[in-house]
Amino acid sequence: MAFPKIPSIPVTRGQLDKGFTVALLFNSVAAAVSVVLFFLSSWWIFLIMGTIGLPFLIGGFLIYRYTRFREPMQRYAKNFVVKLYTKILQKREGFMKRIYTTVCWFLPTEEWKHMNWGYASLSPKGQILSEVDFPQEDKRFYCQLYHYMATGMGNWNTLEGKNLLEIRTGGGGGLNYLAQTLNPDKAIGVDTSTTQTDFCKKSFCENPRMKFYTADTLDKVSDIPEVADRGIDVVISLQSSKHVRNFKDFAQDVDSLLKPGGIFAFADSRPTDDWEQLEKDLSSTSLRILKKENITNNVIQALKLDEKGKFQTINNFIGSIIRRTLRRIGVIKDSVIQESLTNGSNTAMAYLLHKIPQSTLSSY
Image (cartoon, rainbow, N blue to C red):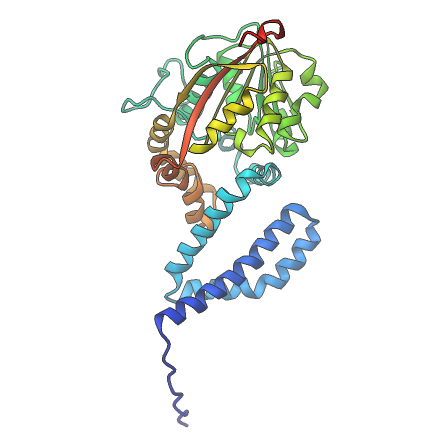
């Protein structure tokens, strides 16, 4: 039996693109709502939303797998996730707390301990530490950033007799490196994620000098009695200041934690136009800049030199469905972070500040 011939309906490329965009937008909104509910609500609400959205996910997968829309879907997904991260998520401390907590669940112990964009000299190998001083070659660039900042950008080589505090300690690998190499009396790590601090307590329980605590927010670390009572000599914070709710409150809290003459060392990447306001916020405290340095080229160099290791981590531990997108937003060569640093929209800066005694503050 012959089936009747169905007349073809002429459809322009523009109409296809418009229809495809509307369909993807609807699917993206449904997915975004599910993600928000996952972060902010009880698990059963996420389960309900996931069930409702399942037909859309299956349909989207079939379209992706078996039609010519695979490439535009990849492009749209990458752009959507990048914009979501850069415009919304990275500016929300609560969202970043959830993201880092989730990453801590998925990545194995050694991989999670070291997470930052790294620091390299502009030499071909990028070394600022010799092989003799640095036994973990695969973690070199992560730890070089810690070493550079904790030594006051190379102004001293020990923290002996000092109490060191790291704000947003993450997996604790950087703080552990400093505890072993610079020999502070105490090495205290604070994070907003209980999952991370529990991870650190378990991983570094054999070192009695290392203590870890959970804060409600990064600008309220002084609310932790065990931290506030220790008399902090050095505070270090890497790749975290852009996530705090209010940098001025954050700087004032660091100020309250430090002893007179204490040191605050931090490094981060931000939109280039943001740094002027950040320095104004710092001027509201008794912290004064000893040294500041544009480390953009050093970060880009570290991204290039460490590309193979980070790609291997993503390929080994991240599912293929989101691997391509994670490469785009991850801290690797040709990622959105490197692009923003290369084109000048973002700048990576390092600051070294010291706390002026109140009696001499008026002269500054």
